[in-house]
Image 1: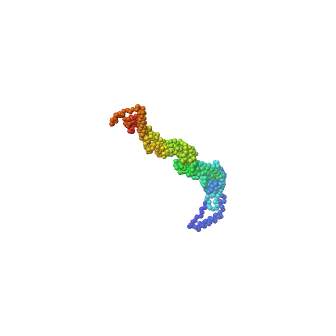
Image 2: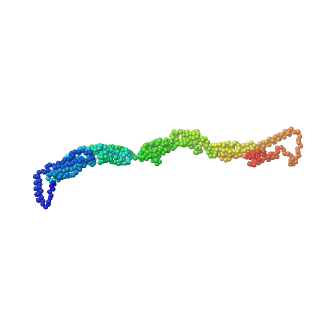
Image 3: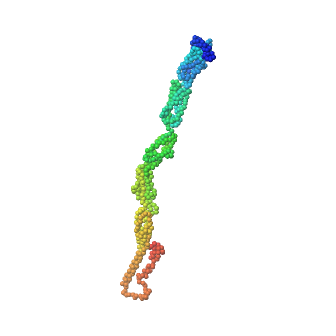
Amino acid sequence: MQIQPPFRVAHALTRYKLILLFALTVLAFLPNVHASPVVVTISPTSQAVPQGTSASYTVSLSGALATAYALSLSGLSYGASASVGSNPVPTPPGGGIGSGSTTLAISTTNVPGLYCPGTYSFTVSARNSTSYGIGPPDTGSASATLTVVQVGPPLSVAVSTDKPTYRIGDKVTISISVNRPAEGTLMLSPPSGQPVQFPYTFYSPTSSIVKSLTADKIGRWTVGFQADDFCSGFSSSVAYFDVTPDTYDVSLTLSGVPTQVSVGLQVDGQSQGTMSGTDIKKLTFKIDTTHTLSVDQYVPGDAGVRYFCAQNTWSVGSSGSRTFTYETQYLFTVSTDPASITQVTGGGWFSSGASAQTSQAPQTITGGAGTQYSFKGWEVDGVLQSGSTVTLTMDKPHTAIAKYTTQYQLVVDSPYGTPQGTGFYDAGSTAQFSVTSPVGFLIQQVFVKWEGDFTGNSPQGSTTMDSPKVIHATWRTDYTQLYIAVAAIATVAIVAGFLFWRRRQATAPDMKPTPPETGESGAGEPPPEGSGEATSEMTADSSKCASCGTDVPVGQTFCHNCGAKMT
């Protein structure tokens, strides 16, 4: 039985002290009644069970002097799960000595995992839970074994990612799986910098977890997972994934363009500035986008020089490079002097080394009234050369000018004579002109003067051809020759008559006719031959021209002055 500890009584202190002293003296001389300990037995003493199951034992107590004993278990792995049917175990006395039994269950499914395979020894100890406090406690113990047999395959782990390649900023999903309870470490090794570790524990036989992260470094990542099954089982797995930029780069260069020349650059029709012949232009675009890049097709250089790119556009959707190639072109300028008097062709832009040829220049070009242009040759780069066309090699800018001389017309107009000098003359030159005078035989036309764009009294003249000119010759009718002829005829007639008369006188009889009688007035006698009276009759035998009033002899059918027909 259990002995109560001494109690304190305030009012009878002396009496209780005497009783206590007497009790202690008696106990000191009593023999030890607990010399034989309680007997503990375990049944069965050994057994084998699969991992994840429980082993059941019976613990029996005999030879017990106390009424109850507390059981304790030792020798199992840390964290082993064991349960006792009843603890303390009651040992009711029978004939003065007590006995009792209970069940002991040991689980092999302890958290965090299965018991490791192997044989384990354990000890069950019993200790009386009731005593009188006299002598040592009544204890006993017994040992047994438990063999745990592995269930299933050895530990195996796997690690993987949802994709092999990501763009920077993407979400990366990592999956880890095990085939039995285990604990391990996930290690992420970026392309640069220190690895990062994440510990994991798997409580179920088959389990998986998912780890997400953001791809923040470009390059190859390493994902490693190492685990053990809380025993001697070990497994590991490695996976890799690549992180690429979310953009792509393109580079542009130029060829055939001098350093000092700038070329405009456009992306999707929008200006992106300029680049020179030595620049390397880099552009960055988002992945999965396409763009059209273009440079100026024609780029001006020095005077008469330009640069031409036949393929000046490029469509891009991924990284790459392109060189835009330019060729040098020279300007061939074709014109006329004076300007725009005719159309000559063949000019334009030509590639370096190409052959260029002008059209054929007309020899004469009609201008305004009284004006024309006469071709005198091609002036090529300031040097006049013959030929109606020009052919040259375009090794530099060239200029070809069809040179024409301006000419003005001189018209010499005269109703009589033979006018000379009508024609075209170079502008600024001196034109000589003339007309023959007088014209006619008896009735003559005599030059009087020049009228129009020139005035003068001489049948010959000259004028500076600074414009088209028309000159008219004016005339007058001259009868001098007619008069002379008439006078000569009259004279001849008189002389002939006189001679005839003399001859008659010389051959006639030498007798003289009786002279007729004459009066004072001389009337009735015929006038002598060739007298003035006959002359008056001849002069009176004429008429006036109805057009100009000039005297026209009788019998003449036209006016010698104006040419009008007489009626």
